[in-house]
Length: 447
Picture 1 (cartoon, rainbow, N blue to C red):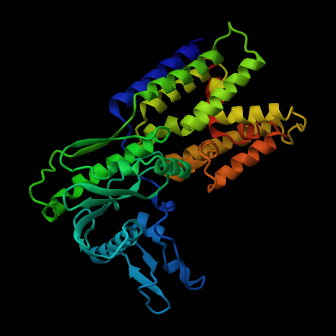
Picture 2: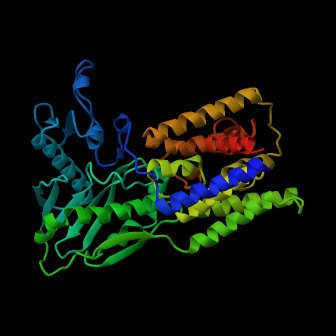
């Protein structure tokens, strides 16, 4: 009992501290070990194996900003169709690469015939765009604004601004965010909310439920870009617009209170012992979890939520309370989240019930080794995330399967695991789930 009380006090102090002070300000340690995926520029290698070491991909130059970068353009053929730019740490060459990246990304965002003029600044270049009878400003965060983080770290976006001082378009360029969340954001018409927002007063857009951290980070980045470059481009816009008071935020709907209240009822059901837990009730619970938390909210608690403050990322109120309930459920009971709340766990349970467990076999690995494997996976992932490998946080089957992201390999893996589950029950939960490993270990330590 003393362990449980002390653990509970620690958890409340932990959440109170980061609620009052915000996340820790950290420096990237291994930032050059991985690059951001981008739909706007594809990495290209040329030359034989010995020559490859002298080249870097477009993706690497976006995140590292040095080395050699190769661009391919059908309209700019040099020699064998490739254009090589030096981006060594010399201001002129580095700026040239950044400008070329801006032009490449702008080409995917803006259609039609236009001309560009680059303006270099201490924060990096931006583009002045002449499109027929319209003048535009194109901004993009380069190596600045990395302190603004989404779920997987900094998010690169492009912002187009009208000559009348209003936003024309905001576009995701690259990030380490989970692809299913990015798809959900795009399908929810989140980016359309930015169109025609004037830069002369405080504005708010609605954050996307289930992708709150990502959408809040996109809005903060757009706001910071305007603040960063306003003194450089304001003379390119009409002079009678006052942009001094502009502030843009993504607000979370108060509906999160209802969502977390319903989830709290599932935790309460798992915790209470007075009311007998029948098979029928567990089936109803499974359907609520799968349909409501899984398909409707598509917002899960994961081990990453617990270490976000150490990654420089602020938790949303919904995820913060979700995390708190999950921790308390492990301290005062036997991991309530995995038993009664997790939608993917319930999906495996439902599939087993539908098959009437006719294919079930004894697992081919001893339970002791299963636990060691899962703990090893969890330790490796947490260590990688803390060292700066943000994309490792995407080691999760939850968002893709409930987000119907057919393009993601995780969607295929999650469906395959459900099928394998018919023979080896709860195979993901038992051998690979890092969230379950963390919560089970907390439960064991507080017995």
